[in-house]
Image 1 (cartoon, rainbow, N blue to C red):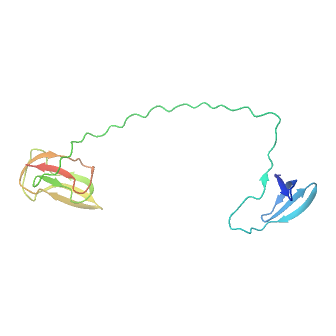
Image 2 (image 1 turned 30 degrees about the horizontal axis):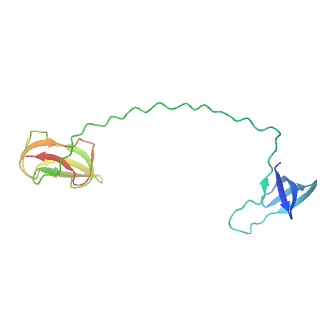
Length: 159
């Protein structure tokens, strides 16, 4: 049974809710039982009464809580990556689309021909072939299978 302190025309009343039937409350005010009908007049819900707070003669003792600090997280090892150089005209094969490196078809030191497929990048569920833009030797490979590459990032260098 909830109790509320209600002020009407400057006078305080203790109201006990006997039964809650939704919009109709059966309440007891100073020993008299009455039925109260509630109807919202504003779209915003604003509490009209506050629950009566129990007064205690002694203040509550403060509570203490022990907090155990978490152990520091182990550092996450980042895969070793070669620094990406600025694209060189004619030598760097760059990603034409953003995506994930699916397959590297060549190795460092390997001879390639202009137009040869050197890397396959998967983008939007399609395999996109990256081709050598000139004949030469693969000097460096800057990516690994499974690595995400942004558009225009260098994938490998041909000299």
